[in-house]
Length: 82
Image 1: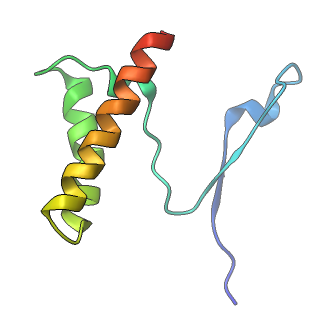
Image 2: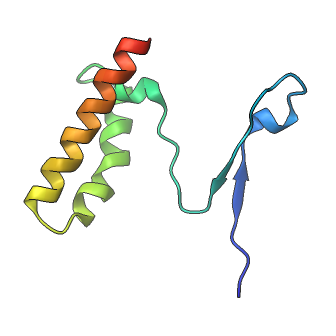
């Protein structure tokens, strides 16, 4: 059994942090700002690049549409919190 790589968030070194987390190997960071990116911006380009492999891996068009709908829902929720 091999060891899995773990990325440790910089908050682990903050003595005032109330919470810290480790990101499992294979997970991709998706900043909330990217979800709120305006069209034709570098942030939107990064969101498209991050989502492209997920969309390509979807088994069919329905799964792709469901993923996009969930992503849009997360964008709407993130916008209401900001």
